[in-house]
Image 1 (cartoon, rainbow, N blue to C red):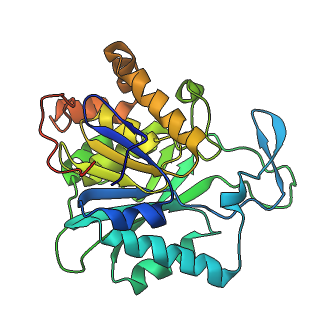
Image 2 (cartoon, one colour):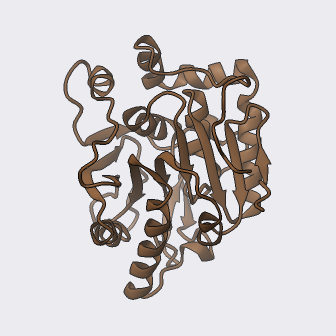
Length: 291
């Protein structure tokens, strides 16, 4: 039996502490959407700039690269496990850079997912390139793929259009990197901004949807999900990061703090206007998580 590391009182936010390769086969629940921020394999003893200071790019042993064959097998394995956890009309979003995204795309194709888009996240505030030998790295890629080749996926097209001044939204999203107010409970080295996760979740899920993140980190996916009335299961193998996710959920359990965060994310206000978000309530049904 799986014992959660943390389960919120509103039953909308659960963290499992462990390896997703070991935990995913132990339950049969089906999710509406999966977001995954797997290792980019960037920890190669290089340097970068952060807040005006030169820092190491090393994130931890989990981000150290292996051989090309090892990386490909890694991506095939977790994507295969995740495919079994998706509803037939579900979709998966995977973030990356050129270091891992081509391997991910090949694995998706091999496993018979249907790739829908490759979104380019163009950061409006990227760190400078200190070597002055390359263009500044300012983008990451997010592959969006659905489980089935033939079963239609969820896409809130009209909402995305409204978020883009009533024009079709393109696959280039200009959004800032993580803001200081998002680090109130500590900082994960690869933490994604809430604005990015909010848009992804709004694009591809109905209200009250269940979302899985197999590489949860500090649970940005879960915080974004709960702010807009979706439910979340995150799997994180590092206990300190799992604890950070717990503290972030406890923080937004204060209605004033949750509203403060919601007001900082422009997409939420527009989604609220079109009645595409709800607040998660304790008396709402949870329909089926086995732990």
